[in-house]
Image (cartoon, rainbow, N blue to C red; front, top):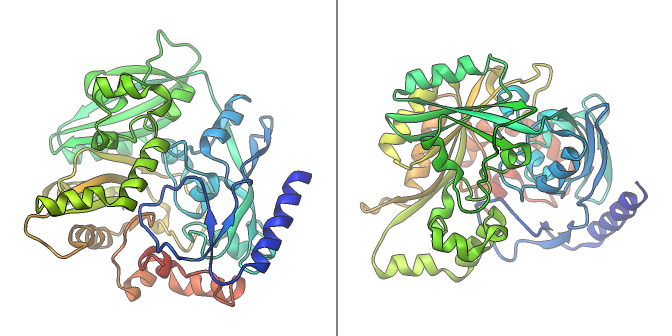
Length: 443
């Protein structure tokens, strides 16, 4: 811990002496909302990226907040275990998944990444570091960090639970042609003894429920890290086998299916790029370069093509999931759509900034594309349709991308009363932007 403590002292001193607003300097980001270029001094937290201890006997891991899940998962897999939830992309950091919202196919049983956390070290805006547990004097911050997006403080270190793994994951892809049957099967499957559950909607009459089970042995192990594409295999195979590490990163090679926008789902491009460049980190760099230079925007203006980016993850109670799926296919039209059930919540734990209504089973819908806008609707038209429907159906959406809520609506959804109580205690000087300013106004 000596190295960790030295890094903490340096960060604390840097924050105490920084002028004005502060934001994190990170080598990767999975946020899809741009902030002003001048939005504060950057605090270099890149060194907080070590796995400090993996205790496979007690099924615990202690890790610094800027550690990527790729590095964290590899350290755990070396001890035949894994974090309870490993979000889909290698570049996601554990601190980001806890202060934001992460999810994956083990979430039907294990909830979201923050629900497996046992304690946190948090760097407050004034440079103080506090240790937070569910039952100490900083319990309010422990439960308030999830979905705070660094507006209350920064996660420096945490301890979280892990689970044992086996060498392989056996997959089964079941096809459905009706949303009601599909989500009924999702609910039933979540009550079974499988280890992983997620799904893919390709069309209104073509959707697949994918389950995974840990197994000691497999007749073969498919490889979707280069020439073959995982999401296409869902339609082509009834069963499949993957090594456990390849299963965790099955979506990363093609950023789910979004790599098609960079033309890398074509065989010549995959041969040219090679295995090492086919990953979410490469695609993020290209996307952020395009945002800076405005190439796509310029081409769209040249041909008078109007589009709207609709990049969102929303969580809907399972009893309303079919209604949301129908709405989405009719009004938004993006295909495919990822679905992932969320359950396993501890009723004794309440996270006020991301309440999942009473702890029942929810279904996450992930959709990431642009929607044609030939009728020249005002900016945010399709995203607002999604936000309104999510609220109508008793759901909640993640805040990593664009949001269009007015301020009163936003705070009614994300518990403004609890948030500002935390803000008064842990950032009384208002040194960090508040959640609405950061996630909606993008300051």
